[in-house]
Image (cartoon, rainbow, N blue to C red; front, side):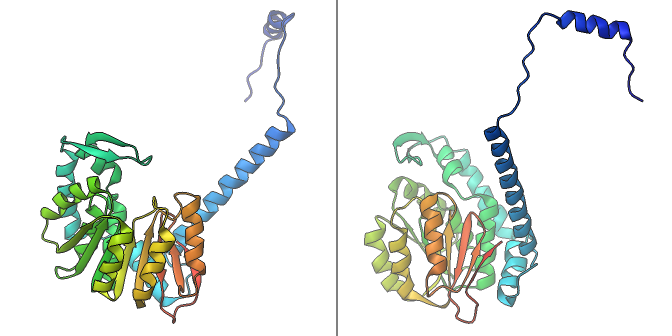
Length: 290
């Protein structure tokens, strides 16, 4: 029941504001249009997220292979024994206060702690687990990682099988110094190279000969087209390329469009922060947003 105001109280209120200037803001046409645009963007973002969630459950995916990847790899949350081992090792480095040089996203070198560098540059556990599930499902004989940073993504990639051939390349010496310590604390067999990609990648590719699985952690690089095209001659029908940071910036978004439109590429999976590329000619050429 609405509250009734006494006439004397209303009269007193009107008397208290009489003689004062009251400002009432009426939104302009531009403000109304801007609010409408923001509302539409919010709605579209919500719908896109909802569609991605449905596709991770397999809805709207007609390819049996892509359906299996979506439901058995991307949507899977079952833990594996190696997850705890890797994260326990990460915990030791997160407690390391040793001073070390660090190139931030602006590439300005400064002194920091190993703990801080690992916290900023190490792959997040959930994404590392996705990499593990992917290689565990696909069972590649060899794994190549371009851009290992501090090495924890390499551990996830190389832990699914003790005899997997894993090759890691890192151009930044300060990251490589930490990743070498990370690799020393595990049983994984990792071949680690440090130096410029333009110099190291060609001989590594010649040695590997056939690429089964490649993880490009190179979203900060300006030569991603060269890296991708250099690896293409060594791919096979069942090769899989994974790209980190496909939506990080405009260059990476344009690069992802280039990959999806490449004639050798068939199915691609857009996970927003990560892209998965297949070359199997039996798959229909389509980009799935999952």
